[in-house]
Amino acid sequence: MISIPMEFGLILAGTLFVLGLIGLMVRRNIIFVLMSIEIMINAAGAAFIFAGAKWGEPDGQIMFLFILAMSAAEVAVGLGLILQIYHKFQTLDGDTVSKMRG
Image (cartoon, rainbow, N blue to C red):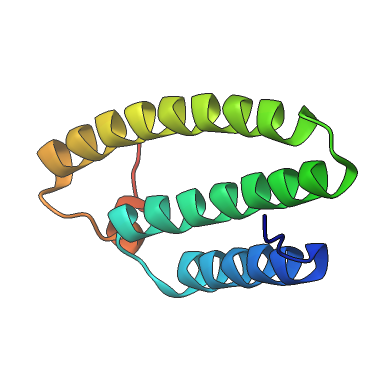
């Protein structure tokens, strides 16, 4: 079985995390912001899997399962918030929504 070196896996995870961070900082659309957060969460999960594979322990895969559960909860809450924001403001622009008064 061919194994990917841990360094390459961590470089991939770091690259995905940086791409998600750039998307989070650049975009103003709330859907793209949530997608960028998902990319960052998956990059952290990939780092756990590569580290667990390096040491031959299942801990990385178990942590990834917890990350997937947290990610699913984040998507459910995020999409609910997006629907409410769009219903109230008729836009998904983060700058418009940040002017909420309440």
